[in-house]
Image 1: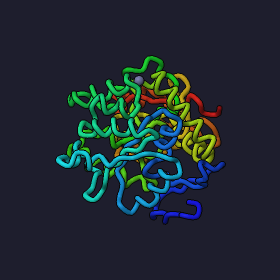
Image 2 (image 1 turned 45 degrees about the vertical axis):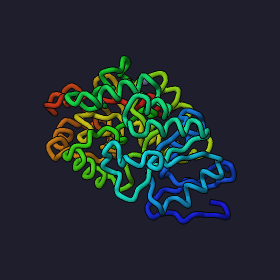
Image 3 (image 1 turned 90 degrees about the vertical axis):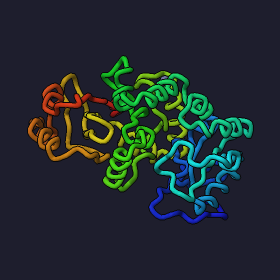
Length: 324
Ligand SMILES: [Zn+2]
């Protein structure tokens, strides 16, 4: 980055900016992910919260200096607490950091750090209150189904959803951290070598897919991306504008296609790869009827849902802006 270029860790995506941002011409799409950085710089989020390796610090401290961001290491404020939420991805040696434009807001968030997942913590991070309350309510009631099914049930207009709220890739915070879930998460992560959790516009789970506050925040974040990293913005839109047939968070199928009425038109399945087995793939192959000579097939959605059995599948049609 500029004359003080920090080394790029292996396998990390570098985003070339279309126009300089405080003298910065390239960003790593990692710690912070561009969706989080965009949320911070557009004031959608007063602070962002990440965990970093020591080797990442030269890059991150340089970024904070150039963008005049304040930060705090909350573990220093709460020496009696380590890993307060038992986060499975937080390996020994990683450090928590809270970053923001204003020192007062950074310090306020740091006070709630011991209560990760609580309502005050979510609100300090700038997530819409309706979404925070919905998420924390889901998290407490372990008999509840997956958060995505929950959000879907809470959505009034289900026919066309914005790709900007597509949270199917964002799996960290959908896990309840059981051994089985941790194992499933790792399996799914390994099936998607390009990574999972950075393929998102918003980094939180909305209360519904038509939540006005989340949609307004997503517009701001996405507009920032269009301005500074238009190629990345276009790629995100392409990857997220998909119809998804969902059984649960580790078992779903995203399609290259669209939904019209009760028919799913598709030219094959899309990323992310999930833990669905050969049985589901065979059902999709059996129910896919040729539609055009160019390789587009059509599936009758009620027939697919019926064939998939339990848990009853549902469709998330993130194609509202497709082709626009
Ligand atoms: Zn909401």
